[in-house]
Length: 303
Image (cartoon, one colour):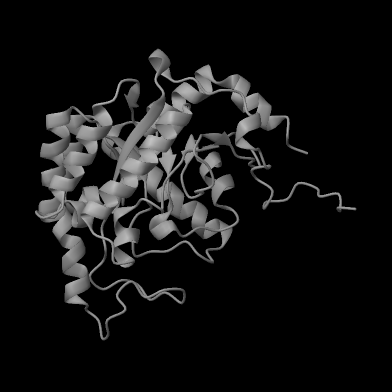
């Protein structure tokens, strides 16, 4: 006999088998929601010491090659992505190191002009949240939400922890900060509600499987990324009611020998009928406004 589990911070998303769920319907009867997520980050040249991970494993610091490869994304790669997405009329959802906008005001201006959506990726991608005490993590999140509000006059809507680092408290703290959706969890192909201490929060799919940086570490190249992502799209499109996240990094796919493969992938996806090219905010807002049967079905499974 299984024990009677009471709710605790680890029991945030009760199991829900995909075939049993209510059908998710996207706007205009679209078969799939697709959001494009360039990770526009800032890596510190001489980061603070971390007992969890060295951002620059080549020793001693500074690691000019490691830093330079990331710096390329802000100097060159993101501008190629601006041009490509402009030509396809795509509004991206940026996984953004908030400090990037302070260091590079030209990037801030370019994103705001295009009305790109922001999924906060912490302050710096070299400042990890692992092992943070609750008060320190609350302050780190508040620093990001305040900076975003000061620069834009808007409420921050999405959160993806820096370098995918997080604590047991992260969902509670970002819900407390008024954030709508969360992308640290890579557990589903649909939005689902997440249990938090107060307020509300949903998860939105983010991919580590078809993610240019992750694949590159496994010796895959840009053509492989395009193939893997195209195969994922085909499956999700056939199933219907799913979300495809295209996770990118300007220092990777913004390289001159890779951008052509990204263009070919986007042309392929957008060549299909019934594709909703959305932002993270738009998907979250539609889900919360129009898919309450789906939300309620998941809530009913909570103990």
